[in-house]
Image 1 (cartoon, rainbow, N blue to C red):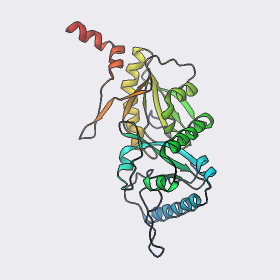
Image 2 (image 1 turned 60 degrees about the vertical axis):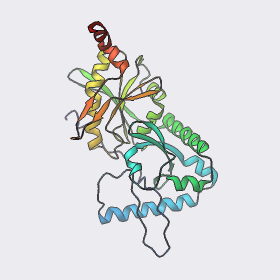
Image 3 (image 1 turned 135 degrees about the vertical axis):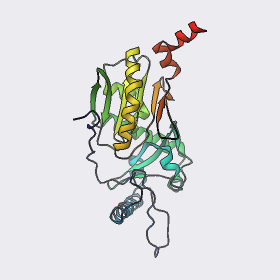
Length: 283
């Protein structure tokens, strides 16, 4: 098996992550709104029909929710910024997690994970801060109780960690990366933070930055893994790689017009690698 042949398809419950339908007259055909988890371009008739059924079921579930059930289902989720910006439904409430990734609110329902646009937030009649706090609290609860597979994988003597799970919120656990990493890798002390990526919703790629050797592994491996997993995985989040330290996040990669990624270490990682010292001596 090749190094990049490890990715498995998750055993999801039937899930569309479909956004709620735009209201229409009863006699009009159902309008299928964009699916944040779809990356197939033009939908076939069978897939479109399937999404219509899931969307209708999700709307029915939402209508049946009492306030307590709504609060129990409300869950924060990290998604690719361009995926919500392209829907035309408005996500002005979305919080910027970092470059290219935003935090939105969803309802984790039996029939689907429903992403909530501005209209659904307004219909709730609730203040946005209280909804966000509830969503993050429920995401934290999922982090504490959701099983994941943590694997240390190596290539040419270098290594990194992959965290993979069946939950569609697996990548979103990076919202609390310090706590999540303590849970997944309790024996690791990342004194200089983590280099990480969220290639798709079921995966987190990360590498501690304890030593200069760790940092070299992270900068050489994580972007390549993230790019490959983003292309091959289910429901991509971001192709980019980031540095997390003291809850501050720096994007380490730039995507060129021809689709290639370049990597630039953060100032702290440059210092760990000794770049700053050499620059100072040269000056």
